[in-house]
Image (cartoon, rainbow, N blue to C red; front, side, top):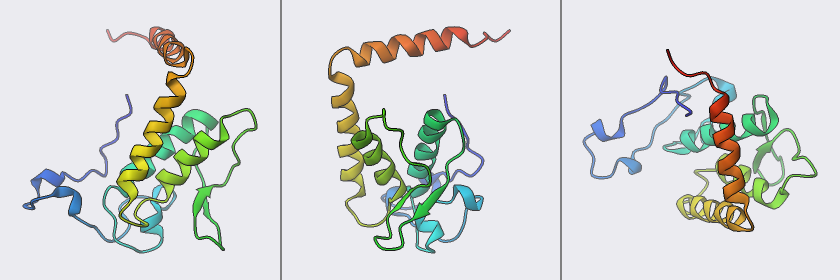
Length: 147
């Protein structure tokens, strides 16, 4: 379970018809954990959440904190480290590009759905989903139980 509510905002506490329409300004976290819209000085909403998800996936893949850079020509944000050659590059590239470049336009929810669909399709090929579930159960068994 990944949990960090140190900088959370309860959108349901706001008196608005659609909490997802709420936009914020400014830097709400440390500079290295700021999403692309914060870094560019634009208003943001759930961009910070997608950046956090991206940073968590990065730590699980690389075992280190994520550094991002912006391509000076395309203005697309990407990870500073390249994907390893034996990883499924189209899949992970799509994930990082989608999660790092949120807020660029209103198509972000569709891009998130498309990325999720790509991962679901990948997991449904062969026995990958069962293999992953078995690995996660094995890993959970290694975690000490609470006293």
